[in-house]
Amino acid sequence: MLVGVVSDTHGNLDGLRRVAARFKSRGIHTVVHLGDDYLDLAILEQAGFQMLAVPGVYCPEYTDPAIPNRVLVELAGVKLFLTHTPTRHRLDAPGDPDPEALESPVHLVLFGHTHVPTVDLRHGTIWLNPGHLKERNDRGHPPTFAVLELFPDAVRLEILHLEDGSRLLAGEYPLPPQT
Image (cartoon, rainbow, N blue to C red; front, side, top):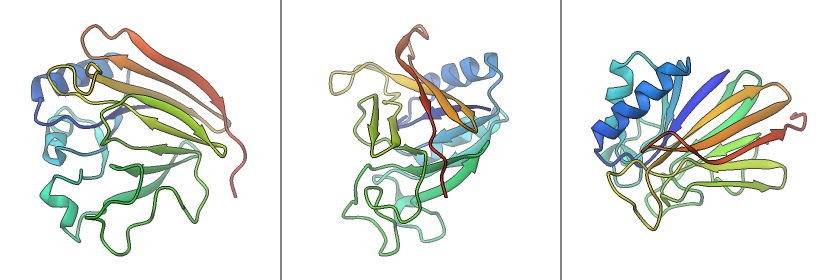
């Protein structure tokens, strides 16, 4: 299963449309939006993608109890935890799980907030930040997004530059069985 991942779009709707076109050309049907700005995901919904999303801490939706700040989901047998921040945040609701102390084991944590494209392996869990989609370089990094290919026993991932679609990071990670 192919999944597109974006974060920190910050109103760059033209950039988001470009990413949507790249996702469509690769046959991606499901997209994860990791917040800031939460309402930007409407562009992806209008393009026909199945959406999974969490709001960013600077979105009014983050304090709306009807919208979860963190989501646990399973796709193609892979357990994913979606969060805007990689750690607890002062605006978290009392019941929001701590990304660093999950009670249920997951294969993959998808997060944003830092604007830094990252792939890290922590205690057998893959942590991925797709970077940001702001118009220009931010915090020393160009606009990027991610594509995941999920298998029951592995995750293949790549982080790609918005500008030309070239690969910034890529890897394949075997998945341990989860209980």
